[in-house]
Length: 386
Image: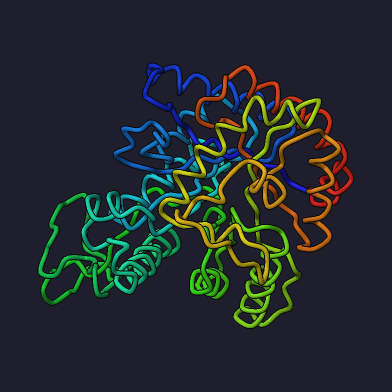
């Protein structure tokens, strides 16, 4: 099994200098790089004056992490590509692939919070899901073409490349049949430089949750990444991805192939110690997330929430813990991972533990215990994958 670390950078109340946030992230990355972790992932959020999510550019963050590591793969979970110009996104990621010596994993997403989506790009407003999904699909298609075609052109609902009616005349750049109309002299195709180091491009991931997103990822050769649902609730989602990917590719895809799960993790010597050190941090963060998403994603199959006056009244450490949290002793956490392997065919697990308000030293201790006492229990699987 492959293990990745999800570095969801936060600074609750903005009490730390931002340089300290970066330094703590680098320390985690260097530790994981030296101790057998497969990958480290950052995410993208904007306008986070609360300090719960403070990394606005995972690609740029990836440049920094690549410079401070040697072997670990560098991922984003995710680049919100609906916010960015697709050609510039393609160029930035291709450049990072070279800077990291081919260690790049590319995660893409559509955006989730309205205050981000509408202000970063009004067309990406998640309150209009149909337009948001169409923009996402078109942006992704442009990025792929920019990476894989020597010269490419594109005309869609949102983008047109190259811009019509433009000529480029220069003695050092004579017109070519592949990129210039011989009659008008107008540019007919563009070439993005550099192409990615990995061929034909870095691995692509989509952070998914709903049935349409799972279907899109599976049918468009994107690996899928899940987060919140309990293991039993992930089973039908894994099966849906497997079935759609098998049909789209014309070959049988195994359960768990091309899929990763992200889990909240805090490993300590006792169950009580995990709750004492990090329980408040994860509950506070889930209050933030569930205020937007509700509690439905945390439910077991067929479960119904009790009727209460507030939509988050059920949310507590005791309610969350058995559903999707890897909090507790090494043996408890390993047992939950074994359950995911058995039920989901899980091959790639991402964890995060630098929760809001949790002391960095406690986070590092937990990562070390996970590395030393949990990961070795899956070493035989890691060797088979490698």
